[in-house]
Image (cartoon, rainbow, N blue to C red; front, side, top):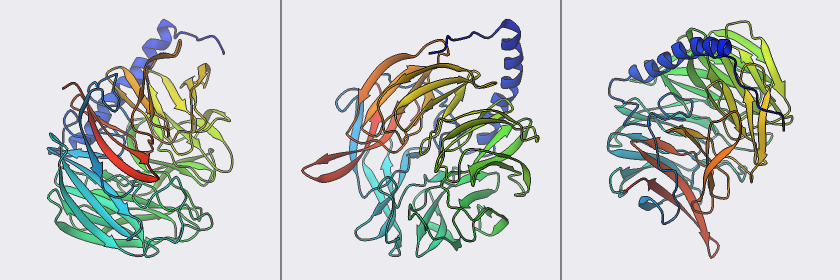
Length: 430
């Protein structure tokens, strides 16, 4: 492995100058929603800052009978992550046999299921990839409403409910057909100021669009290439401005989240990607996918300059950027640390794959699970890999955890006697 290189004093000063304003700006994202708090809520995909970084710490050691505050069964099947607002946890789920989409609600303190709201019935696609589900997009919340997107009856539908599960509105946003690969639908929506932004990318009328949170009325719609892809869009404050970022169709693209107008694009990754972009300072990082493998860094100042790239990929999972370095656990289970500025490989270590879940940084540790339920906990250290715990939880992990209030909320699954059962865990110090 290449020898790790330390930042010089001058580099550290420059890096601090780049990162400090970005960190402050990221906190402002959740400040647009006064009924939410980064320390108490996990209101959308990848957490309050939308980059997999939690506001506090979490238990390092846990397992099926270690540091379990509670564990409850989850009806149906899904790969969506927990959404946590106030005293409730929300999960989208699907009964694939009956073809029913639902939202399940749980009491945060006890885990008791307190609701199961049917959203739609029928119209499921004839086929879906074995690693996808009919409830993969994560629910998002503005602190007053829940927003969930589902694919059924050959269309994409966006639904808004209040926190008690009462429907506020629903809109069919456009046609969708998962062909030619029949891999289903996956992108989570993202909320930005007064809108909910949804991506629907396929070999037809592909688009990314924003819809009014109060009414569902269309605010803007921007066409995307006719190309099936699965990445969730994300809004970050990068290079001094809010940017809507997404990869796929062999491009990394940035849009103005207020208008949908293109800001810049760069060639890279692959035709199909699943992971959500991450960023630090004025650099964004993307990885994919199918049919080729590529990870790259792009300067997000409008130039679209590709700073570096390599032939590794995180296809289904997202990555994590912190402290000037990029951490990536590939689908085959190889963990990399690259320097963000130039892509220098600091170290790599083979763990165990396959991997679909995305990581969370909490309390100075990165938490990352493979599909077999092994949760690696390691320090973000560019000099060497420091694994502090290996925790087995359940037998299957595809969803990504939510970490808030010193606790980990995680959706996993077990198989016994040929029967599969999903579980929701709350992990923490009792």
